[in-house]
View 1 (cartoon, rainbow, N blue to C red):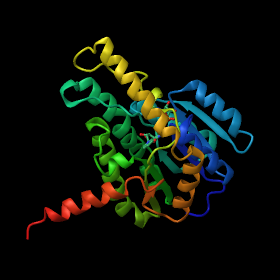
View 2 (view 1 turned 45 degrees about the vertical axis):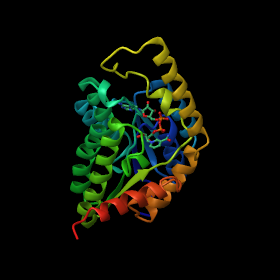
View 3 (view 1 turned 90 degrees about the horizontal axis):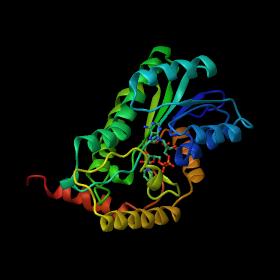
Length: 273
Ligand SMILES: NC(=O)c1ccc[n+]([C@@H]2O[C@H](COP(=O)([O-])OP(=O)(O)OC[C@H]3O[C@@H](n4cnc5c(N)ncnc54)[C@H](O)[C@@H]3O)[C@@H](O)[C@H]2O)c1
């Protein structure tokens, strides 16, 4: 899609990080913005910045809430016009060892990282199809959606599913002029590690003080690693290019090159002779 000017982009997780980077890029390309997020203060900051460039609507939404999602879509389309660019980007990085998993943890992580994306698809794709004016959907997965490398089973389960969903939708929506991309970032300099702690249910067994401390240190270390990564604004520009060129996969670096090769080789090696 090359005619971004005048289109309406709906961006979940648009108040911070990668979502905000996407919002900035698409605003500069002439799109009107509907930003949906749990973070009301972040939404207000984003609006104050971006309304200098384009028309912006902000919506407090938990992407897990299907009724609220539909109501938000109605409100955004009434205010801004039909949505034809959809960014299912809101997500959290939650990790727990298999022995300490609970259904609450599964529901939390899969609820946001997978059902949030499903809810975006289910809300907007039928509207796009009915209007027949094409569009583009970008689902945010992760490098951890391509190869399991220690991000934890909660995160990998959801992010692998988002890759599969995107590949399948890419095939099935092409004839309707709706492009589908899946963003699989490597490290991106955002505050996701700390922000993801908000609202996370506790694991099956309470942690000792020493364990809590070790986890906090690990989070601090991981967050520092992410700060060395690609900037969110740069990711936004990569996403715009991918939408313009209708590319399925969007990588932000070559971080996963060797793991992807190793996984692909292992899959091929497992084929019967
Ligand atoms: N930062 C990275 O290194 C990295 C790497 C790979 C994948 N990702 C993925 O990129 C996406 C964006 O992450 P980010 O790094 O920009 O994080 P971020 O924390 O900076 O932004 C995520 C946004 O999503 C919002 N959000 C969280 N739960 C929500 C919910 N239930 N409903 C609505 N909004 C909600 C948060 O308030 C926040 O504004 C996520 O899906 C994440 O898994 C990030």
